[in-house]
Length: 131
Image 1 (cartoon, rainbow, N blue to C red):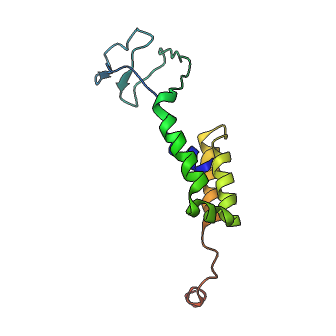
Image 2: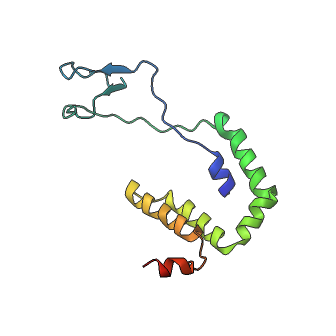
Image 3: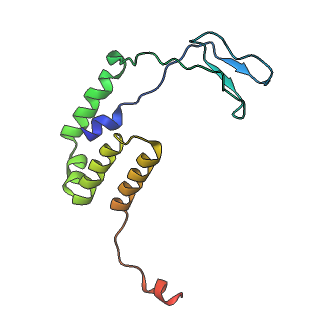
């Protein structure tokens, strides 16, 4: 399942006609579905955002899902890696990170993944004498 989840990419599709507002005096679009780009400092106080229903396009990702399952179920490298308790824990933590409610908590969860995977070799004696 992990290999499958790594193979699937997601994105947001917007209309092709994106309006660019370089001038702060220009009026923002009044159309509800008009994508635009403006300076980060520009006030968007009067902007109303309408979010449509999310859609899933299986015809675009089905091949990646099948390939991910094939790799996950047949790869000796993946199976050997998951026999390592640290790698298995890191995979669980990585998967769980997708369910965090904020970017900050997801970031902290991913740091936990790296902590589990980092080398646990003893510190070199040179480090102790460098004080």
